[in-house]
Image (cartoon, rainbow, N blue to C red; front, side, top):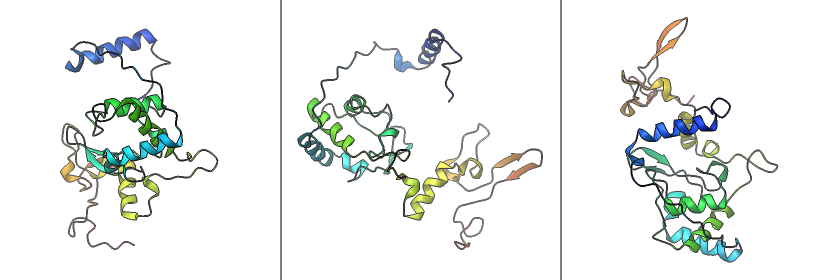
Length: 223
Protein backbone atom coordinates (compact mmCIF):
# COMPACT_ATOMS: atom_id res chain seq x y z
CA UNK A 1 0.00 0.00 0.00
CA UNK A 2 1.77 3.18 -1.15
CA UNK A 3 1.29 6.66 0.24
CA UNK A 4 -0.62 9.30 -1.76
CA UNK A 5 0.27 12.52 0.05
CA UNK A 6 2.51 13.73 -2.78
CA UNK A 7 0.02 12.74 -5.49
CA UNK A 8 -3.44 13.67 -4.18
CA UNK A 9 -4.50 16.79 -2.36
CA UNK A 10 -6.09 16.55 1.09
CA UNK A 11 -9.48 17.23 -0.49
CA UNK A 12 -9.08 14.40 -3.02
CA UNK A 13 -7.90 12.00 -0.31
CA UNK A 14 -11.07 12.78 1.63
CA UNK A 15 -13.08 12.08 -1.52
CA UNK A 16 -11.38 8.68 -1.84
CA UNK A 17 -12.12 7.97 1.83
CA UNK A 18 -15.77 8.86 1.28
CA UNK A 19 -15.98 6.46 -1.66
CA UNK A 20 -14.26 3.63 0.25
CA UNK A 21 -16.70 4.10 3.14
CA UNK A 22 -19.60 3.86 0.72
CA UNK A 23 -18.54 0.29 -0.13
CA UNK A 24 -19.39 -1.01 3.35
CA UNK A 25 -22.61 -0.88 5.37
CA UNK A 26 -20.55 -0.39 8.52
CA UNK A 27 -20.69 3.37 7.94
CA UNK A 28 -24.43 3.62 7.24
CA UNK A 29 -25.44 4.08 10.88
CA UNK A 30 -25.24 7.26 12.95
CA UNK A 31 -21.77 8.79 13.19
CA UNK A 32 -19.78 7.68 16.23
CA UNK A 33 -19.35 10.02 19.14
CA UNK A 34 -15.90 11.11 20.23
CA UNK A 35 -14.41 9.18 23.12
CA UNK A 36 -13.05 11.36 25.89
CA UNK A 37 -9.68 10.22 27.22
CA UNK A 38 -9.27 11.05 30.92
CA UNK A 39 -5.99 12.44 32.26
CA UNK A 40 -3.24 9.88 32.55
CA UNK A 41 -2.51 8.31 35.92
CA UNK A 42 1.13 9.13 36.80
CA UNK A 43 3.36 6.20 35.72
CA UNK A 44 4.90 5.68 39.15
CA UNK A 45 5.84 2.38 40.78
CA UNK A 46 2.43 2.07 42.46
CA UNK A 47 0.55 2.44 39.18
CA UNK A 48 2.86 0.01 37.38
CA UNK A 49 2.37 -2.50 40.20
CA UNK A 50 -1.41 -2.24 39.93
CA UNK A 51 -1.13 -2.59 36.15
CA UNK A 52 0.94 -5.76 36.52
CA UNK A 53 -1.70 -7.27 38.81
CA UNK A 54 -4.42 -6.39 36.28
CA UNK A 55 -2.32 -7.82 33.44
CA UNK A 56 -2.27 -11.15 35.27
CA UNK A 57 -5.86 -11.20 36.53
CA UNK A 58 -7.67 -9.84 33.45
CA UNK A 59 -6.45 -12.54 30.99
CA UNK A 60 -3.92 -10.23 29.28
CA UNK A 61 -1.27 -12.78 30.24
CA UNK A 62 -3.13 -15.52 28.38
CA UNK A 63 -2.59 -13.91 25.00
CA UNK A 64 0.57 -11.88 25.55
CA UNK A 65 2.46 -14.25 27.84
CA UNK A 66 3.91 -13.68 31.32
CA UNK A 67 6.65 -11.40 29.96
CA UNK A 68 4.43 -9.65 27.42
CA UNK A 69 6.34 -11.10 24.47
CA UNK A 70 3.21 -12.28 22.64
CA UNK A 71 3.65 -14.70 19.77
CA UNK A 72 0.56 -16.70 20.71
CA UNK A 73 -1.45 -17.95 17.73
CA UNK A 74 -5.08 -16.81 17.98
CA UNK A 75 -8.01 -16.42 15.58
CA UNK A 76 -10.03 -13.34 14.72
CA UNK A 77 -13.80 -13.04 14.37
CA UNK A 78 -13.63 -14.52 10.87
CA UNK A 79 -11.48 -17.48 11.89
CA UNK A 80 -8.25 -16.17 10.38
CA UNK A 81 -5.00 -16.70 12.32
CA UNK A 82 -3.69 -13.78 14.37
CA UNK A 83 -0.41 -13.62 16.28
CA UNK A 84 -0.61 -11.71 19.56
CA UNK A 85 1.48 -8.55 19.75
CA UNK A 86 4.89 -8.37 21.42
CA UNK A 87 4.29 -5.70 24.07
CA UNK A 88 8.01 -5.17 24.59
CA UNK A 89 8.22 -3.70 21.07
CA UNK A 90 5.96 -0.62 21.15
CA UNK A 91 7.18 0.50 17.71
CA UNK A 92 5.04 -2.33 16.28
CA UNK A 93 1.81 -1.29 18.02
CA UNK A 94 -1.21 -0.87 15.80
CA UNK A 95 -2.37 2.73 16.09
CA UNK A 96 0.85 3.97 17.69
CA UNK A 97 2.59 3.64 21.03
CA UNK A 98 1.57 6.96 22.58
CA UNK A 99 -0.02 6.35 26.01
CA UNK A 100 -3.36 7.77 24.85
CA UNK A 101 -3.42 5.41 21.85
CA UNK A 102 -2.73 2.36 24.02
CA UNK A 103 -5.49 3.47 26.42
CA UNK A 104 -7.88 3.65 23.45
CA UNK A 105 -6.94 0.13 22.25
CA UNK A 106 -7.57 -1.28 25.72
CA UNK A 107 -10.84 0.61 25.94
CA UNK A 108 -12.31 -0.15 22.50
CA UNK A 109 -10.54 -3.35 21.54
CA UNK A 110 -9.46 -4.15 17.99
CA UNK A 111 -12.42 -6.07 16.59
CA UNK A 112 -12.69 -8.10 14.40
CA UNK A 113 -9.23 -8.91 15.72
CA UNK A 114 -8.93 -11.05 18.84
CA UNK A 115 -8.17 -8.06 21.09
CA UNK A 116 -11.36 -7.43 23.17
CA UNK A 117 -12.62 -4.25 24.80
CA UNK A 118 -11.96 -3.85 28.52
CA UNK A 119 -14.27 -0.86 28.98
CA UNK A 120 -16.82 -2.94 30.90
CA UNK A 121 -14.25 -4.95 32.86
CA UNK A 122 -12.03 -2.33 34.45
CA UNK A 123 -12.31 1.37 35.24
CA UNK A 124 -10.74 4.16 33.20
CA UNK A 125 -8.08 4.67 35.88
CA UNK A 126 -7.28 0.95 35.90
CA UNK A 127 -6.83 1.09 32.15
CA UNK A 128 -4.21 3.78 32.72
CA UNK A 129 -2.48 1.46 35.19
CA UNK A 130 -2.40 -1.18 32.45
CA UNK A 131 -0.98 1.35 29.99
CA UNK A 132 1.76 2.29 32.43
CA UNK A 133 2.65 -1.36 32.99
CA UNK A 134 2.70 -2.16 29.27
CA UNK A 135 5.01 0.79 28.59
CA UNK A 136 7.28 -0.36 31.43
CA UNK A 137 7.91 -3.56 29.43
CA UNK A 138 9.37 -1.64 26.48
CA UNK A 139 12.85 -2.70 25.40
CA UNK A 140 15.39 -0.58 23.57
CA UNK A 141 14.75 -0.62 19.80
CA UNK A 142 17.45 -2.39 17.77
CA UNK A 143 18.34 0.80 15.89
CA UNK A 144 19.20 2.70 19.09
CA UNK A 145 22.41 2.37 21.15
CA UNK A 146 22.21 -0.70 23.36
CA UNK A 147 19.29 -2.14 21.41
CA UNK A 148 19.17 -5.72 20.19
CA UNK A 149 17.00 -7.80 17.89
CA UNK A 150 14.46 -9.66 19.97
CA UNK A 151 11.59 -10.58 17.69
CA UNK A 152 10.36 -14.04 16.67
CA UNK A 153 13.04 -14.25 14.02
CA UNK A 154 15.65 -14.38 16.79
CA UNK A 155 14.23 -17.28 18.81
CA UNK A 156 16.53 -20.04 20.03
CA UNK A 157 13.92 -22.65 19.09
CA UNK A 158 14.85 -23.33 15.46
CA UNK A 159 11.43 -24.75 14.58
CA UNK A 160 9.61 -21.64 15.81
CA UNK A 161 12.22 -19.39 14.24
CA UNK A 162 11.93 -21.29 10.98
CA UNK A 163 8.14 -21.02 10.99
CA UNK A 164 8.40 -17.26 11.42
CA UNK A 165 11.00 -16.91 8.66
CA UNK A 166 9.03 -19.09 6.22
CA UNK A 167 5.99 -16.85 6.70
CA UNK A 168 7.91 -13.57 6.88
CA UNK A 169 9.81 -14.34 3.66
CA UNK A 170 6.54 -15.51 2.04
CA UNK A 171 7.82 -18.91 0.90
CA UNK A 172 4.18 -19.89 0.47
CA UNK A 173 3.85 -17.29 -2.28
CA UNK A 174 5.43 -19.74 -4.71
CA UNK A 175 5.07 -23.04 -2.86
CA UNK A 176 1.28 -22.93 -2.28
CA UNK A 177 -1.31 -23.49 -4.98
CA UNK A 178 -3.78 -20.72 -5.73
CA UNK A 179 -7.22 -20.98 -7.30
CA UNK A 180 -7.97 -19.46 -10.69
CA UNK A 181 -9.25 -16.45 -8.78
CA UNK A 182 -5.85 -15.96 -7.15
CA UNK A 183 -6.88 -17.17 -3.67
CA UNK A 184 -4.26 -19.29 -1.94
CA UNK A 185 -5.50 -22.65 -0.67
CA UNK A 186 -4.61 -22.98 3.02
CA UNK A 187 -5.08 -26.75 2.93
CA UNK A 188 -2.17 -26.95 0.47
CA UNK A 189 0.20 -24.59 2.31
CA UNK A 190 3.76 -25.25 1.08
CA UNK A 191 2.60 -28.34 -0.86
CA UNK A 192 3.96 -26.97 -4.13
CA UNK A 193 2.34 -27.40 -7.53
CA UNK A 194 2.12 -23.67 -8.23
CA UNK A 195 3.08 -22.43 -11.68
CA UNK A 196 5.77 -19.76 -11.42
CA UNK A 197 6.63 -17.69 -14.47
CA UNK A 198 10.39 -17.12 -14.85
CA UNK A 199 10.56 -14.87 -17.88
CA UNK A 200 12.18 -15.36 -20.35
CA UNK A 201 13.14 -18.89 -19.35
CA UNK A 202 9.63 -20.33 -19.15
CA UNK A 203 7.39 -21.69 -16.42
CA UNK A 204 8.47 -23.65 -13.36
CA UNK A 205 6.32 -25.71 -11.00
CA UNK A 206 7.19 -25.21 -7.33
CA UNK A 207 8.27 -28.16 -5.17
CA UNK A 208 6.42 -29.68 -2.23
CA UNK A 209 8.07 -28.47 1.00
CA UNK A 210 5.82 -30.39 3.42
CA UNK A 211 6.98 -33.42 5.42
CA UNK A 212 5.20 -35.87 3.12
CA UNK A 213 7.65 -38.82 2.75
CA UNK A 214 6.85 -39.54 -0.90
CA UNK A 215 6.27 -36.17 -2.55
CA UNK A 216 7.75 -33.78 0.01
CA UNK A 217 10.82 -33.54 2.25
CA UNK A 218 9.85 -36.29 4.69
CA UNK A 219 12.85 -38.48 3.87
CA UNK A 220 15.38 -35.64 3.75
CA UNK A 221 17.96 -35.16 6.49
CA UNK A 222 18.51 -31.77 8.07
CA UNK A 223 21.73 -31.44 6.13
